[in-house]
Image (cartoon, rainbow, N blue to C red; front, side, top):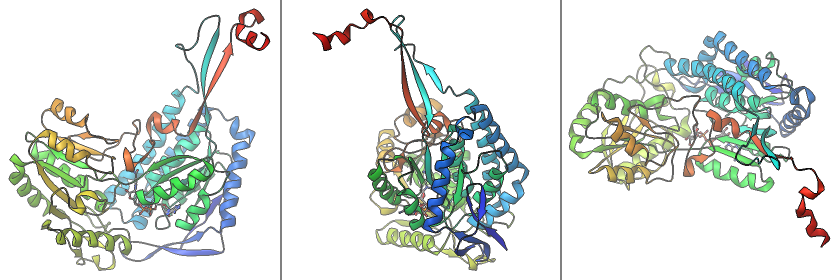
Length: 495
Ligand code: NAD
């Protein structure tokens, strides 16, 4: 059986306690996973701190760090089949999604290497500099020891978005994966061990809430980067307040997908389904609120029902599977309870709403694609479900659509569908979320920032903003007037 060990200070280590990770599609054991003790976690933080202070890491220039990122990218490509198989077994991802995630992760490391090569770690500020008086620089320095925590829904992509900027910035980290999905981060650890990165720069462990909480409470940690639920995000902000740690949070969402009267329904319908069914709805940016112009709603509804009938839910490895199981019983129960609440609140179930058990699906938790017609007060129109459930409502005017889209505690993503790009853009500009697509959904660009407004998070990952969130900025003031009489402000002391 595969064993997943702790990766601390460049070495793979066993620990006293272990558990079996489970394939959510069939209940089979994927790996024996070693769980870190508090002492192991402290040791990982110590390793990250020593690495941060080592001259080997401090003196490694950006070009060399970029080469390491490219090495990681190339190795992921070389080992893509192994990554894909393990991601499927751990997370229940369909084959096409897992393949895309592996490909996108390799691309991400490569794009980041390119960004790093161009990034100016020292920038003269022309506007502030005054000839004969001073010249002024901004210097970007690594933030230091990071503690990073990721969820189970996109294990490899999330690990990459965390580890990438640590290496690029010259920081160090202890990354904790979700206990459900430790697999592909462990493969990343194998690559990192042979990448030329100094020992202890990246340490990878797994565990649940208590291991996460112990890691974050360590005073040596200078930055916390967390991806997960908004509920846990609140607790993490509280923890961070104790040591005033720098925090970035990527949290939940309830994104609105707006179909305008003039939308091309040949793409908007499939786009709306892709927006909420991708990975069984277990994506933070899922388009789980569908807002449709009431003038075209009968046609949209008929087409949604026609297309949804053609979607195949199944075992992740079965050909043609659109999506597989949800991650575990806890998640399944939570989704089913939202479905029941919704019915009680008077929402109209158009299709789905039930567990699927045929064709080998009885050993996992598979949920049929579910459409509800709701009003804007319904619980499922407002709360994140993290399952294959869509809440649909209509609007009369574009202003109403914008108000509905922005009426949320979240602000992660959304989309507008229209044949008129300018019209769609006009609406997109007024949406208060970190990403808005026009005639598209879910596609990300590693050169652009990703993150949320309001309770969807703090800070951004990817793009220049993502790199900068792992950098502290320093003002360097260099005086160009160095005769005593050129510094009359000192005279105030001697009057
Ligand atoms: P979760 O908050 O329960 O757990 C996330 C991670 O935090 C796990 O590794 C868990 O072990 C750890 N954790 C839990 N409690 C902790 C605590 N008190 N202290 C420290 N660590 C703790 O979330 P989840 O159910 O695993 O993931 C689903 C959530 O993640 C959804 O809400 C989803 O929207 C969100 N998510 C957001 C993004 C984004 O980029 N915005 C991406 C993926 C997932």
